[in-house]
Each structure stands twice: as structure tokens, then as C-alpha cells.
Image (cartoon, rainbow, N blue to C red):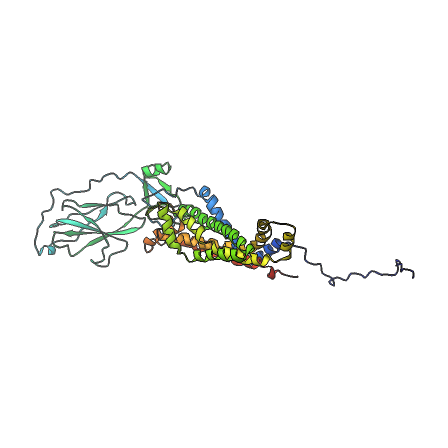
Length: 466
């Protein structure tokens, strides 16, 4: 039987019809496909960009925002956010001798003397009223023994609403008073009451005085502002305001991010690494070794973290008011790796029965080579997800420990310790608590959203098919 020999005319090629045959999706690796699916998750992608911005703020922020986080400006205590405010340069206040009358008005001590005491008249300022000082003088009142001075941030409605008592003069001859108590650039209402030692005058006079922001000549020199008394200068901006010691809050948040993110990233990386090695060895050998190693993890899970944090601080000799960064890092690493070990153990128990592992074992591969070359690399997806969920937990733990005084202690800033300081003045200066709390919440939220996106993107069962 002769074999069939095809000829050129036996087959006619079919003409390609547009739209009938579609080009298949180009071949992609596992990580390329995961990146494409991660980019489709808008929340996870936005979270990734925010995390990159936080890291850049931590690394580059000190060079971009060159304000000393430890510099204290006592004239800017607990100031709200300010952007390029101007200030008047005034002479250094020195000691003010005040204004006295001569001879002093005689004191009449009588139970009915208040009927003869009149309201203080002609209250006026001496010089310009600034945030450095406000100097008042008034006309003497006949029969007065001394004068009481009050300050309010609104117009008093009655004698019970005069505001903050600043002090009193020693004698009736003193008809002046100097106020330097935490002045701000705003309007104040000053009230001066005459008293004879038994009762105060029934009437009172209030004067409204606008206070201008100012700095002294010596302060201008310290800030390298070449200006003399009477000049107007532009002060440094404080986008987040200042704290209770006059320190720039943005500079302290940037420096605090170095501590918070260091602990929040280094500690999870170390405990994930420890848990990966421990869980990989336990899952590969199985049997009695696996049971014994898992009982160790059960024991460590039952240990109270806060108690061991206290013991670590005592062991390192860290007393009250001192920062315990190293004990906190050690406690996190030694007491948080059990979940990662359980996760890796479960993955390795499945992977060790795969055909490629059996083939490598038949070729003579040693156990450590199989664990670190074949098994653990195949658990990298779940490990990344576990790491992204561990980072916000570590950040929140550091913030909590610093908040209760067990972590980072002042003056070293961290977001947790700054929140603790801001809580004390929450009602009067809410920005001191608001901004550190925002950064803690934003960082925890972004890492959680990124973890959700990575969990979906690295799941091979969710690979899109076209």
C-alpha cells in the first residue's frame, strides 16, 4: 500500500474572519497577575500610596520641615494652627515700676463704706498691648484700700462674670497692673474693682483691649530675624499648631513617626520571620515534633502581654518616666509570632504532599533545603497578608503602651505619647490630641485596607480569566 503524499492543491487555507478568533491574554506570572488585580482595587491602591507617603514623611520630612521638634517657644503655648502670621517686635519688657499716686488715698474701714466706693474710672493701657505684656493704669478711687484686677475673653454680663482674677495691688497708692499671663493675640476685657478690705465696690468698669502678637528683640535675634523694636516680622508657620510647651506639633509628629513606624514595621517583620521558620520546621517534620512545638505556641499565646512588658522593663532597669523602646520591641517579637507559626505550619502541611516536593525529596534534597527553597517561598502570599495585618496591630500596641506610660516617654515623641499629652488639654486645645490621633487612625486603616487588597490579589482562585 502506497503512502498518501499530500499535494499543494489538496488543502485550501480558510480566510480569517474579523472577530471570529480573539487573541488570548498574554502569559503573565503569578506576581504580575496579582499586581494587576491589586491595581483594580482602588481602596488598596490608595492605601498603598498613603503608606508610601507616610514612609517618605518619616525619611524625608526632617529635611523638608526644618523646625527643631524640641525647641520651646513659651510665647506660643498651645497655639492653634497658624500660617505665616505677622508679629510686632517690641523692646524687652524688663521690670516695670508701675504707676503710683502721691499721697495715697486714706483707707476708711467701715461696714457701710462700700456705699462711698465708686467704680474705677479711666482704665487705659500704658504703651502698646501685646502678647508680651499688657500694662494698665486707672484713676484712684477715694476710700479704696487696694484694687482687684480681672481678665475675661468676653464682655462681662454681671459682677459674677468678671473672668480670671489676675491679682491685686498691695496698696491704694498703686494704680497700675502688668499682665503677662499666657496672653494671646485676641481681645480681652479687663475689669478693675476697688475694695476697702471688707467689701468691693458695687459697680465695676470694664475696658476692651485688643492684644497684638509680638516678640521681643532678643527673641527676634534668636530666630535670626534681623529686626528692631517697632518692626513687623513674619513668624514661622505652624500648620498643626503648638503643644503645651510651645513646640511645633508638625515637627514632633514627623519625629514621632520615626518611632511609631520603626516599631510598627521592624517588630512585625521580626516576629513574622521567627514564626515562619518555626512553623515551617514544625509543619515539615510533623508527628511528635510538630505536636511538641505546637504546645509551646499554645503556652506562649496564654501569656499576658502587659505583664511581660512590665517584667521586661524591670529587667532592663527602666524606671518610671523613661522610654522603654527596647523592652517593648522584645516583648512584641517574643509574644506575637505564634499566629504566624500556625499559619505557616498549616500551609506547609499541605505543600509537603505536593508532587514537586516529593520529586525534590527523591532527588536527595535535605529537609532544610526543602523547607526554605520549596515550601516557605510558596507561602509568601499568605505571609505578606499576615505582615500587613500585623503592622497596624504593632502600631496600635505601641500607641496604647505609650499612652498609658509603658512605652515611649516624653520628651521623646511618639504618636501614642503625644496623644497622652494632648488628652490633658483636650477641651482647651483639641488640636494637640486631634492630629496624633488622626495619624494613628490613618496608618492603621491604610495597612488594614492594603492587607484586604493583598489577600484578594494573591488568592490564585480569584485569577481573572478572559
